[in-house]
Each structure stands twice: as C-alpha cells, then as structure tokens.
Amino acid sequence: MKRRELLRLGLTGAAWIGARPLAGFAGPAAGRAAITPAAQPAGFDPAFASVAELQAAMTRGEATAVSLAERYLDRVDQIDRAGPALNAVIEVNPDALALAAALDAERAGGRLRGPLHGVPVMLKDNIDTGDRMTTTAGSLALEGSIAPHDSFVATRLRDAGAVILAKTNLSEWANFRSNHSSSGWSGRGGQTRNPHALDRNPSGSSSGSAVAVSADLCPVAVGTETDGSIISPASANGLVGIKPTVGLVSRSGIVPIAHSQDTAGPMARTVADAAALLGALVGTDPGDPATATSEGHAFADYSRFLDPDGLRGARLGVARNYFGRHPGVDLVMERAIETMRGLGAEIVDDASIPTASDIGDRELQVLLYEFKADLDAYLATRAASVEVRSLADLIAFNERERARELPYFGQDVLIEAQTKGPLSDEAYRTALVTSRRLARDEGIDAVMQQHALDAIVAPSGGPAWPTDLVNGDHFTVGSSTPAAVAGYPSVTVPAGDIFGLPVGVSFCASAYAEPTLIRLAYAFEQAAGARRAPAFRPTALGE
View 1 (cartoon, one colour):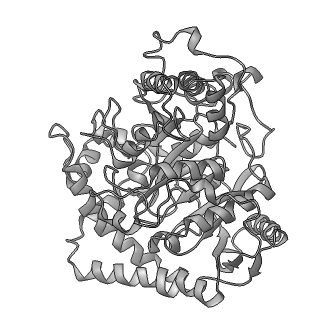
View 2 (tube, one colour; view 1 turned 60 degrees about the horizontal axis):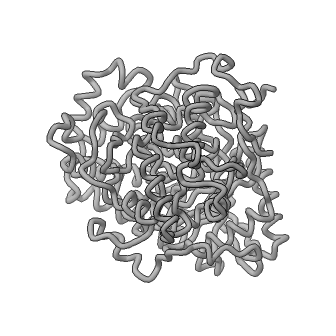
View 3 (cartoon, one colour; view 1 turned 90 degrees about the vertical axis):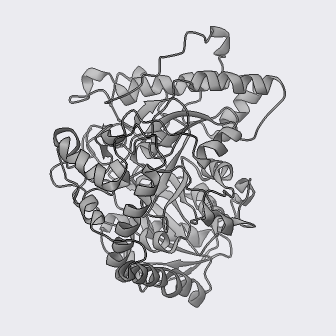
C-alpha cells in the first residue's frame, strides 16, 4: 500500500522521541522564493512514482522539474528532519531549484536529454560534486570541503538531465573504519534509520541512499559498493540495487576504499528505474583506466532488457552455501525459487560457490593495502585548505576529535590499514591474485561453467537488526563477497519480508552480465510483486 503524504496520517515530530536535527544540514527552503505558484501544476500525485511515471507527467504538463524538486525537498523536511527523523539526507543542494528551472526551460524549448530529464537524484556523500555541496564521506575531517570538480558520475547525471537534489548519509568512510561500527552512522550525519522499523538498522554503507529511495525522498539514488554496500542496504530497505561490473561505471572523484572492488551503482524501487539510472552512469573515462574494458559492454539504454518473460528457459543455480543461517530467509528464498521455476526457469540445485568461505582474510588484506594507497591519492586532489591530506592525518584528526568522531566505536581498521606498506609488497600481490582466483576462476566462473548457468541466485541478506551503537552490527546472512571480490555484477530484488522487514534475492554472474541479470530480475520482480512501501513503525514487532 502506498503511503501518500505521511504527515496527513498524523505522524508529527512529537511522536518520535529522540528525534534530532541533522548535524551540518543545509535546509531545503533556501532559494525557493523565486519559484512561483505557476510552476507548481496540479493533477499529478508523485508519491512513490517511477521514473517513467515522472517523465510522463512532465511530458503531459502535469508536473515540472521544479514541482518535483519542491515536492521531494518538502518530504526531506517532513520525514527526514522531522517526523520519523530518518537522517538519510546529509546535505541538500542549494542550487537544486535553479537547476530544475533550467531543465524545465530546456523542455519548453524542445530539448529533452533522456529518461532522467528533470528527475531528482540523490548521491552518496562520497561522490564528488563541484558545486556548493561538500563531499565528506560522512567525516568531520572533511567538513566544509568542496571538491574541485564533479566526479565522472555527477557529470554523467548532469548530462542526462538529472537534478542532483542532495547528498545522502552513509556509514562513515564507507564503513571501513572499525570492526564494531554501526552501519548508517557518520560523525557528520548521525545514525540513519530504517523506514520499515525505525529502531532497525538500514545496513550500509550506502545507507542514506537506500533509505531516501525507500521512504520516497527521491525516486532513485546512487550508492557505492566495495563489498555489499549497495546490495545489503537495498535488500534491508526493500529496494532494487545494481552492483555493476568493476569498470562499467567510473570511480573518478569518488572517495575510495579499494580500486580492485569499488564501484558506484543504482538504487531504486524497481528494476526499470535502476536500469534507467544505470544507462546514465556508464561510460569510458580516461581518469579511470578500468573503464576501458567496458568498451562494447555498456549500454545507454538498459530498458531494452526488461522482459517480463525473461526467466523462461533460463538456467539458475542455487547457492545453497548461503542457506541455513536464518529460517525466515530460507523460507523467503524457497518461495522465490518456486516463483522462478513457475516462470519457466530451470533450477540447478545445488550450485554452491565452493570457495566462498576461503576468500575473507585475503580480501581484507587487499582492502587494507588499497585503502591506504587509494585514500592518500584521493586526498591529494582536495584543496590545500583541507587539513587532512593522508590516512595518517585522518587518524590523528579522529584522535583529537574523539568526542565527536569516536563516541561509539573506534578506528581500528584505519589504524591497521596505516601499518601496511606499498602495493608492491609481496603480501598484497599474493592476496590480490589469490582472492581473485578464488572468486573468479574457482568461484563464480567455475560454477557458471560447470552447470551452464545464466546466473547464480542467493539470499541478499537477512532482515534488518536493531541498531546497536554499543556492540555494532549484527549481520546474519550475506552473499555479496564472491561477486564483489571478482569485480562481477550482482542485482538484488525484493523477495519478501520477515515481520515486515524486507529481504532480497540476488542474481550474480560473470563480468558484464548486466543485461542478463536485469532481464532475470525484472521477470522475477513483475511476478513476485514483493516490494512494500515502508510503514515507519517505531519497532518491528510493535503496532
């Protein structure tokens, strides 16, 4: 059931004990005086509308880019800052309405850039924008710091006509700071809440992007993933998430963890919306050599792969090694598999990834080495006025600002990364080669070839756990690692829920299999109809 205009149902700020304003929030009201009532057409309700529905409404003259931007900014005020106080948005673009007005003028003049023309999009706060918004990765160490220019992703979105509406909160430094972290918490933005049950965790690190889309603060958003940071929060918040092949989407201008695994990707309420956003993000970039491999594999229009009959004749392998960890998740997955079988898919059961449990420590070593090298290189691109210019500087800043930056958990991961040597170290090179072999040759590729599969299916994650700032996260299930380490694509789609908490199913395959995965995911989504709008319950088991 769609929730149109939450405040009309009586949810007010007073109802949510403990709600607090966002730290460093740039309020959306700024710059609205120039927008006249004539720019606010009536007759279209954009609540939980798809990208195609928003575009059609603008084509009919029932909405404008300005009216849509205003509407989503109002929701940020009403349910992100007040009401449930989701803390999904860390900063609003003060130029959003002016950008929207310019795009409306282009439309009136007969220019339409594509399916995202005039559509609001939010970006995770580790993606550079060369405007008046800052890029901080959620850290107070970069507070007030503006990137020298747009990331490649931001440029692609602007070229596609999207309105970059805001930056979203995240697990600070993309959740690569402590082994005891709470996903969705950052020193700058505080703790993001899951809109399906406010005491539950949104998962991370693309927490704010997931919550913003789930709660209809925007129609689509961009997240980033190193291992699970798109797939897991998308699953926990009832969304579609696409983790692309590494190299399909440029990383230039994105705060890094590790170049061998990092990628940006779409987060949306439907596969069609995620496909529309993916088409706008892809492209070769001289600033990111990995994108050279995407030549001939990227598509400006992924909507061509949306086939409701796309599961017929497909061979799908069930990765049983991710079952048996949560009975509710297993039940949701069994129903999902039966749905796929009923749609004509041939199910190969079991098609477990035999090396999955052997990857862990080797992956961690790669991430520690690459984080130190990649973060130092990224920080060198920031303005000389930025105090933090290296990982060592960041660690020292956090120690000086313990009260604000380390109130709940420490920086043990940062400290361990700082001990690592250069990328020429034999320990790093061995860990990289071995982890890739386990994830690719002896992992996903081996299973796909052995069973002649189109994709491997597995549970994306478990139901959201209660946020725990004392002990940190409580993951139960997660299947993202093989695809993440291999640099291969994966797509998660809502599959069901447990006590109203969403659970997703993931489809993964070998490099540049996005068209196939989108086809399979879309067919399942259309038949399953498992996505539900969030209920904003105070607790999962409450009324």
